Image (cartoon, rainbow, N blue to C red; front, side):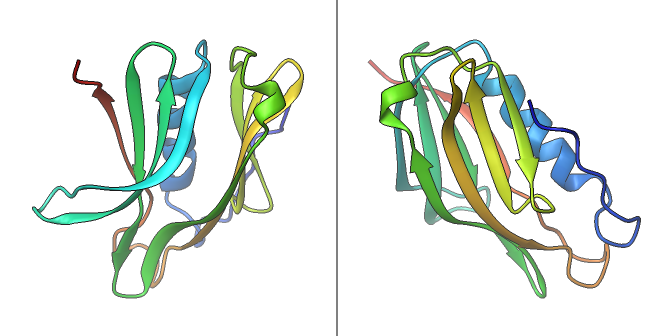
Length: 138
């Protein structure tokens, strides 16, 4: 549905396509139950805001932004198309140089993410989402 984007060798070292692939691996074949921004634990202790997609299989997909000096990745906004959440996700694509992410089904986009990002001083600093899949506790 969306063509794979190609960035220049000094724009991205593969981090953004890897992030899209990780998100695709987690959500394709499932339905979205809920999408929200919440506080989650960070890798280094403490908490930070994350975008969380709750799926019909009882898992949460957490996208936590990163910031390292002049490099960063952050979710700036999201749009959930509630009329399409009953459709099974068939893919994830991007447009606008990885600034718009599309989680889509056969009927079109189910969820759109607006993403701000920069590799900073290429590739000295870390960027990209920290993506994790978490089982919901009963």
